[in-house]
Image (cartoon, rainbow, N blue to C red; front, side, top):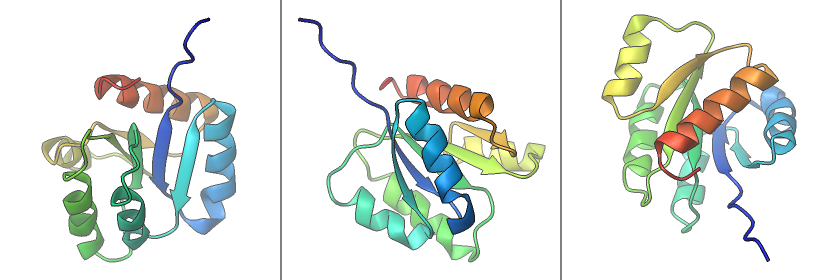
Length: 130
């Protein structure tokens, strides 16, 4: 009997109007998505002992303090997930800021199936938890 590989678990902050599309995409890739609408909802999922391979975050948050709260929650996780940021445009400043803060990469919208799948798989592989 062969062992089934671990299903990639993805925790994502996604606007309500995009959630169904992102959920459908991640599920179609064979991944297990957990989607929340607001950054403040992440703490519930990161503190309950669940582990995630990748955390998908928007570059822009409604409140600037949301970023600090998110990073504070994510750096405490063990094992640490790869952090993937999505944005409408990716500037060098955004990309370097994400990398400097410990994130994996920035992907630019629109999040097509191929782009999202490849980015999430690369991020999971970088964390050594593919």
